[in-house]
Image (cartoon, rainbow, N blue to C red; front, side, top):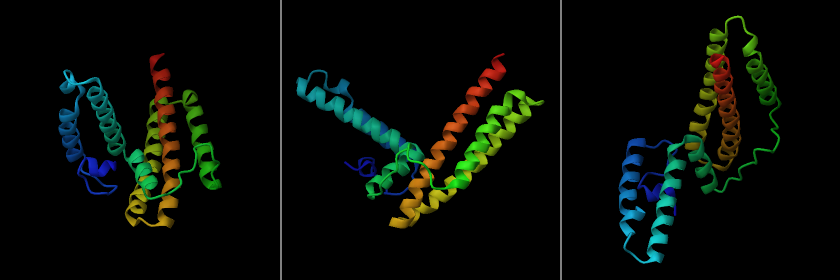
Length: 175
């Protein structure tokens, strides 16, 4: 089952989230397990499985990074493991700098300003990579898909950094 076909959407990285949501609601109404409460146990099990598949497909398509991973896998691109080391040494150095930036936040003279600056830095760098990903996903060829798979991994690093920033921010402002 192709998720784009399931929701009657074009096979494109850029999707209409309102159409996705509407299709999801419609499919869930038809496949919801409660509609099969008086059916056989086999039909009930199938309804639960179908509903779970619809939920999984929706979660993947509504999230850009998951959508990119799904599309790349559909295109036959091997997705490197998150444990595989990066060959991009500049990126690795930047990640170390960003981690240091986050570690220094509690010691900043202006914590609010430092947190805002860190947030802006992470957002800007994420957006630059995300724009590159959008273009590569449109290109849809083996070379661009390979680069896109690396960018997806990089974007996941930024998401983790953003979560770390949120955790630090909670600790700083809960005190």
